[in-house]
Length: 458
Image (cartoon, rainbow, N blue to C red; front, side):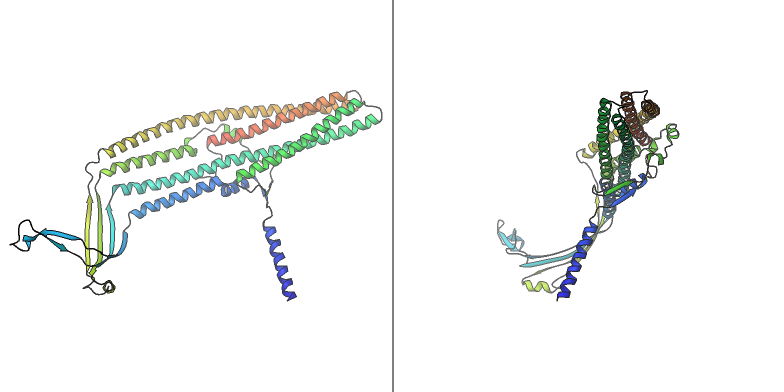
């Protein structure tokens, strides 16, 4: 008994350990491409768009099913508590009866039943064939909506990814600044202890050290915040650990080649979606026009009915005297004649809708042209700003190094070193801001060209 208890306890502890291990946050080591692939699978907006595609596919099946044979089976049993009376002139049965005399007749039995099978097959219905084509176009539109959601996710994830890289690079720079100021503080402390520096110089350096310490903490938090934002855009649980395995230097940018690339409406998913919407609107208009055509259906029916005095007699299904059968077949033709001009007004609305979509297409073309040109100029401007700020940062670093050498040689002041350090850090901040703006402008320009995610087939 004790051994059994020990085994149960070990099994329980092993199960708890396995459960705890399975709930531990996962660690993901991703490149940009891997982040995008993860987002395409786990981002909620992409999942919703994918489900909408499945809904459209099922909708097409719904239209197809309407043209297949419709088979129904029915069965009914009735208890007639009081049979319906029929009134007839009495002289139809008795010529000697007065003209105004009426006799009352009762038709039916206390119990009656009916069992039947009916088949209806559509032979011709113009609306069905148009609707079937329209449903396939609607399915194509849902696929493009799915592509649009993937492109939007690609933009958001790429921007968030670049934000992480820039913040990591900024943190590394702040950490280098921290080490530099820490070294300057220790040197100033030694010079002060040996009487070669004033207390003012030491205190001024301590202030800078405290500032850079705070900046280092804030830079670290900025990295963590940007990583959480990236995980959110990817659809990844916030508690999971995401490790970026790339640096900005690892990414290849063919900026100049893309700047010289012309725009193409066909590359933009928004334009393709609008063309599909126009096609769908034409089918919608055509569907209303074919409503003027006749409809033809074929129907078949077979069944048995019975009328008896005793309920138990209804169980004699094999007795054709009790349950005689019936059979019928026919064609049903429906010809619309006048509907109060209802269809005419609906068609008029659909024509106006088609015209609206055409004007929307023209507006979208102009919008794409403007978006490409503006994003192109913005990218060029940000690239020029990046080059300028990079040159300023290198120059500020050179000034700081020269100022520090002069201070160490005793021909410069501590104040000059602090000022040069502040100028260097401002130049670094300006550089990182320009770098971030250039990366975001590059993403927006690629989206305007319709090449943000070239692996997605439109």
